[in-house]
Image 1 (cartoon, helix red, strand yellow):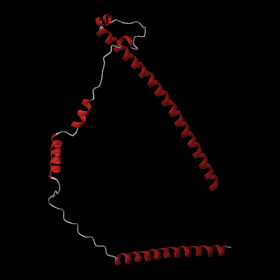
Image 2: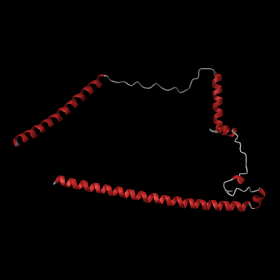
Image 3: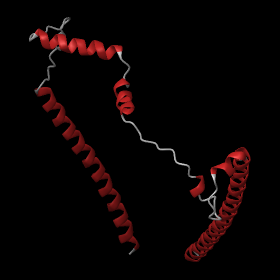
Length: 181
């Protein structure tokens, strides 16, 4: 049996060497065929025709004059003048309405007359601004807390996944070590 295994190993190497040599010979044969075929038909590229130095216009001169006038007009104008004119032509209707009496800030439901609000208008504006700033600060703090909670949960999940991967790697190492032994 040992002699048979040596004979098979020897023959296997012989066949692989013959296979490689045959493959190289086939590629050379194909390359020679391709080069012979390309040598038969020489490809001649004609020189490009010379470009005309002048543009000769044949046709109605009125059309050319109209076109030339349009080109000159476009060169004088800015590129977006037409678009600006179109946007200016659209008139947006804006009716100013006193929404303070109906605003969501008036939670009590009372109608505030314009006489009451005109006396301390600047104070109300400052108070409204301070209230809105405080509300925004509270919202930012709340959102920041939620983001921190999500971040900690995400970090826990990442740690769990890393631990699972490490456990799987250790099991694979144990299996490989047991297979090698």
